[in-house]
Length: 133
Image 1: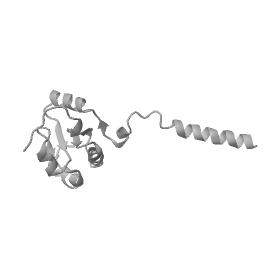
Image 2 (image 1 turned 180 degrees about the horizontal axis):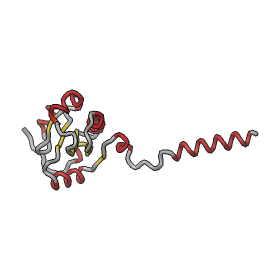
Image 3 (image 1 turned 30 degrees about the vertical axis):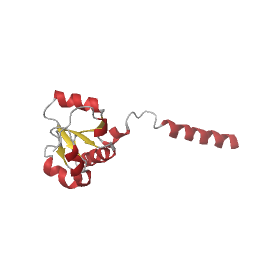
Image 4 (image 1 turned 90 degrees about the vertical axis):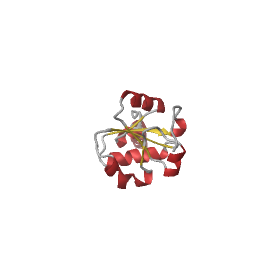
């Protein structure tokens, strides 16, 4: 009897452990996709209609940002996104300084109904040109 319970417990443990093995990217379960800076740059080069969204603070934005990026600080996404980003089917590439805020903002955009949201992390990984104000 004791062996039977141990076997059941072992099967439950194995099942729960293996249930997460098939996930390549947890962010895809949040409705947005992760990209590298290189992949984001290639998308920008291939499609000029892409929206680039900087979710850092205004001060950070002024020190240097990707050309054409729209600034909406992550703390204001839920209030201001629909006003500035009117096309919910547009492709939106989101970045911040290191990647933490961009992931949160990308999830917020999906929650608001945006369909093509990509998080490419932080500008610290951006090896391409930036502009300053």
